[in-house]
Amino acid sequence: MLKINKFFTVKSYKPGIAWFFIASILLLIPGPDLPITIDWLDKIFFDKWVHLFLFGMLTYFLLVPYCKKQVFTNDKKHYAIIVSLAICSWALAIEFIQKNFVKGRSYELTDWLAGCTGVLIALLFIWRKYIQQPRNQIAL
Image (cartoon, rainbow, N blue to C red; front, side):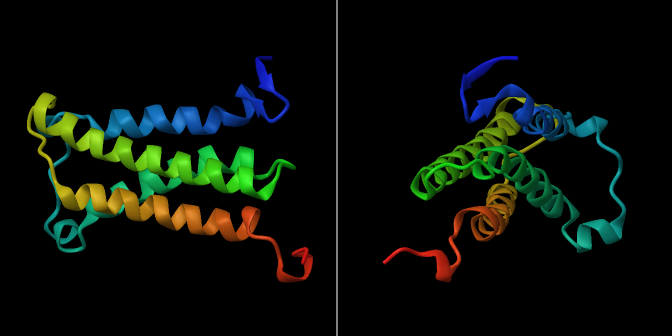
């Protein structure tokens, strides 16, 4: 198995890598190939919920393997912030790719904001569960 260092194994990141490709394929389906939307799905902004879910899960799958390791808290914080910013950048890139290269798709700022909201929700969840030290364990 490929090991870059003792904290990184490809095996632990397989769900995140797989989810990256699944999400990218789903987000780059040409507009005419998408199923016809039902009126009530438009009313609940279903497409925004999809973006929130796809990018939130991507963040979760890419952060958890590292943040569960026994590394310094500051390293976890830096990793979490960098990965989260990278995923938000990827969400923006997807919007530009949709606009310029995918037939029947367009750029929507609100899709990007929904994706970033998913990233933020996942980041906050992971931060509280794996990064933030309990108050009684903080060294003075």
